[in-house]
Image 1 (cartoon, rainbow, N blue to C red):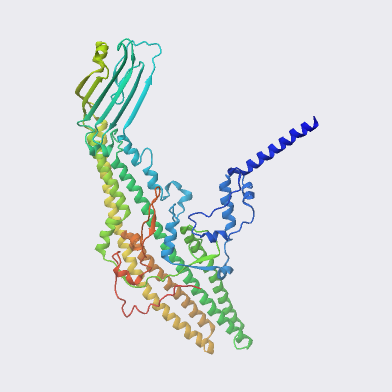
Image 2: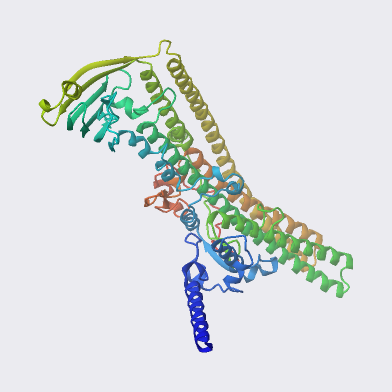
Length: 637
């Protein structure tokens, strides 16, 4: 007994071990392996270089309230990113030289959810546009294109009814849904029908069954019916606008659905245009942040030299200690300015780190890594002139806001046509044909007359007051007037915006030229004062004052240079030609997603060819007074 007992326990232990092995090998219980996001902007080698600090399973166990996949991803992202860099680590980060075209390409490739600077994805996620939106609407079971076309699909119907007691009292022969005979006795029914695009309803069908009282046994019959509207709901155009099942105020035809799909596509295009604009603006803001840092670093180095010189003079008892203290104070103020230029004083607005993080957000890159994006420029400096009439005409025809509004107006025009058609009476031509499939002599006279013969006639109906239909027409007309008034106001607003950008472009170019000359003069003054101070002819206050002026002039020139490029971007945005100017167009679409891509180089990648590009820009030759604008290097250290 003991041997048998131990044998049973051994089998139970083996069974439990097998169960444990099978359970742990089940796919749902395996340890999740982190995968690199498809739209992260990092290569496979970048992700493979990241090491986890603790097993993924432990991270998932620490978050029992989250699904295992979500817990794994959140843990992976937290350990895969380095901590935010400090100001002292600035020179230790690897520079990532990135052109504007490459930045836009990254933004487009990583933008299934089209981002913006406002952070609406957190506050208003329903308002965020994605490249999936057109496909979502197209496949909507109530509002999509297929939903509108489904009203014209052929419908198939069949049934079988067994009458158990054989009682056929009060049997009624009438039409079914598709012109098929129907009665509550033992029968089989088969029918096919559809509504044509002209509004005509066509149906054919057959029945067969057993009826002892009327048919005297087995019977079979077939028939067809045609119903064609002559007034209300008549015509291909009306049925494609409103649909065959239209009601006053409810129009779901294929043409209405196509316009709504076009509106969603335009909204996605507008979101992409705003993304390209935001990326371009932040890119040049980052360019200025680096130039501002370079100016402040140069100022700090100059003040360091002046301070060392004063230290030597104090040691030689040539200069009083308070002068050395003034130079020391100026040096530490310059050092603080450098730190502020690296980290920023206002979150997201100043400083290399702040603006670089803002660009990373738009490009869907990790918030922190060992690389630091550096624009390689150079920015445009040539004089750019746009033709006003040409630009205004382009804006009136190219601005996405107006194109969306024109789609709304086209929809309202179609709704008026549909509403006016629904005012008309329902007058239908009806034709029916029925025939017995077996020998009619074997059936009773009542049965034969009920299931064999033909009919032709008309069916007429309409509301007496027609109030709802009349209100629908008036409502559609008022909607059209409203949309046209909005479109007219939009045209005025667009012309006003374009005028403002023209003025700002002219101002920015003039300011850039003036600040270039100011910067050149300040550098001459600083060099002369530094030489005099080294020779002991002047006090350190004069050198420090010249340094402050030179730093301010350099910063203001770089600011005016960036403002000129931003003004150029805003003119193209106001003209509605920004995507063309940046070389952005539709990419290769997928089944469920529309895509955008950088199909050609942007105007910033080929400034010498601006006068030959397709955006309509015109560049004059630099005059003699404009050639002294110093060229800017493309790399910053």
